[in-house]
Structures are given as structure tokens and as C-alpha cells.
Image (tube, rainbow, N blue to C red):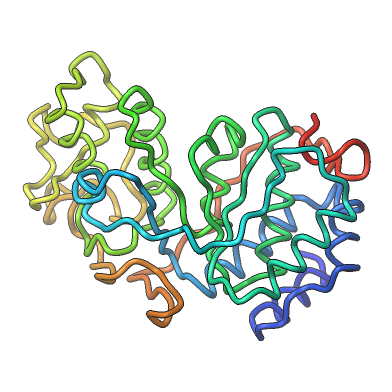
Length: 300
């Protein structure tokens, strides 16, 4: 990582964000430095939130199934980059949000944009506002596509949709959190993924024909081990890093450290995860530049 980004990490850790000129420079001149910028943002996110991520959902039954409770996002600031916005306006908006008293910000993403450009904006926002909850509403998976799991290391709250037609996508997000060592705050060590699959089953969703769903629920919310009714540990593709593997010979998959009982909120003193998050596994992606200086962030 460059010395410039190391300095930004130190400043963010000390509670000092970016000024508008620095934000604008990173937006328009950041091409070629995207991965270093994302790494810096992930370090800042980990320093502030550890390995915790908060969940928002409109359905309390879904929150109960995940083993957590839904956070309130109505008081959050909104950063709208789903529309055409130039780099000057975006820099001003990020600076304003960073200086606001709101504890969080909801980022509205465009449907058609280069995912790496969106990751650059999210990373800059994290460096500018290190202590704020950065929340992604419904639809972020379609915008970020293959970089969705990488974004979980920069943002600190996501919406889980209660639209059961979208369950395969939610299933993949929950698996990505598990494999990335990121724990849903408030779950207290419960298996959110297994709880979600049982929630779907209770709603009558047929999971029998979906190998990924059957294999992803190793362990249970009740701590029932790895059998899952589908052949034991051999039924899923890979172990979860956050639990040290499937471990059927050593206590089952529910053996990870217990997470805090409350979801993140700065009024609660911050998040304290039970273990540190591993470094993100970065997928190769086309680097298309921010685009903010040439038609706005809502453009391809």
C-alpha cells in the first residue's frame, strides 16, 4: 500500500476525515489505485467496526430468523449516485455527509455502472467518514455484481430483502459474509444462513432442487451440528473461515466466538467482533475509472 494511503488510514483512525479537495482528487485521479484504495478503506472499516455488519429488513420475522434485529435507517443521510452526478457535486455531497451529525448514510447505487467505480466511491466515503455506518439498500447486488462480497469489507450495514423471489441472491450474500469472516451483529453466534433457509422452508419455498441452498446450511441455529439432514459435512462446497472449517470431529460448525448481542450503533459504543476479519479476497475486475468527471457516476 502506498505511503499516501497509509497516511489516510492513520488520519481516519485518529478521527480525521478527508477535505473536499482530497475527495475530489481521489474521485478523478484514482484510476489505477482502486485496489489500494479499497484495501485502505477496509482497514479503516475494520478498525471502527471490527468484523461486524448490521442488517436492515422490513420484515421482523426475517430479522428473527437471522437471529438479529433490524436497524433503523430512516434517520440516515442519503448519498444518491444513482443519478448523473459530476465529481464536484459528489465531492461536496461526501464532505457534507461526513460533517453531518447523522450516524449513518444510505448509498443509492445506479443499476448500470462499472462496479469498480462504485467501489471507489464507497471506499472514498469510508475514508471521509470513518465512523459512520455506510448502508446499502435493496438492489446493491445487481449494481456491484461480482464485487458484492468485496463491498462487505467497506460498508457496515446492508438491507436483506423479504422478497422470497430474491432468495438465491440473499443466500449468496449470507454465504459471502460467512466465508469472508464477517458476522451479523446481534446474532450471538447463531447461524444466520441456516435460520434464513428455515425461514424460507416455513414459507413454503422448495429448496430441494437447489444444491447451493442445501449445502450452505452446515450447522443450525440451535447448534445441532453439521448434519443438516443432507449427509453431514460432505454436503457443502467449502468450510467457513470464520468457524475454522466444518469441524464435525470437533464440535460442529457452530463453534465460532459469540458475537455481541446488540447491532451496531454509535450510541451503543461501537461494534466489538469476536475475531478479526481476514483480508478481502479481491476478484479481478475491469477498472473503468470513476467516470464522475465525464458524465457522472450514474453512467457506464
